[in-house]
Length: 245
Ligand SMILES: [Zn+2]
Image (cartoon, rainbow, N blue to C red; front, side, top):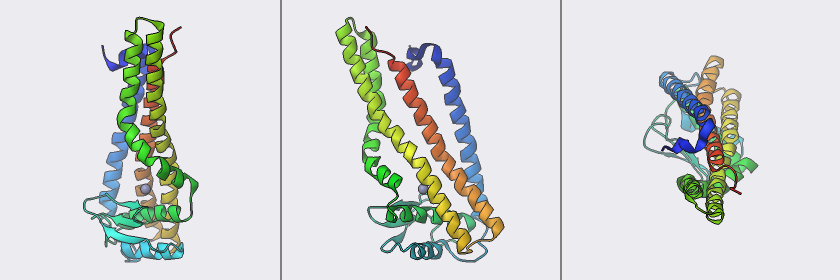
């Protein structure tokens, strides 16, 4: 008896959706890798490097106190709001490629979000610790609850299972909410980065189009994460079903 057993008539549909998301993810990751490989080789028309561009963008947005650091690895770039540091990976730090500048400008976009008090960014910061914990336990709590519901010999016992699985679903909703606010935050950071690339003329017009492709493909991975967490939430809800009367 597999995990999908509980879904009854819906299991076929869920398999299809899950496979669809998997294929979508493979396509996006393949495209993203090839775009980054290609545009990591082409220097930006301005000749400026990613660090210079980030400093320029920070000053233009009147963001002071944020520093740039070198983080090992490829594409490990991030903005750490607590430390107020933009971490640039080997792909970006000190590099003058189109991809390096695009990714660095995107991370700088996150710093600008934090300093402009963007509400969605604040929400994500607030729920991130809880989402990280519940992402590990919520699905299991929901499954245990459903197992109790199915194994229960009495209505009271079954109701306990229902309550447990509902708790798991509520906890998983925090994870879903995290992905739900993350996607617009990521798109917004890319838009801010691309606007700066255009405004300050770090790249040519054609290079700007290439940068947009890179950042949009990177953002698609967050769309996939959102779709996949929506599917998980729906799966848990259908798995639990209704309270047994
Ligand atoms: Zn980002």
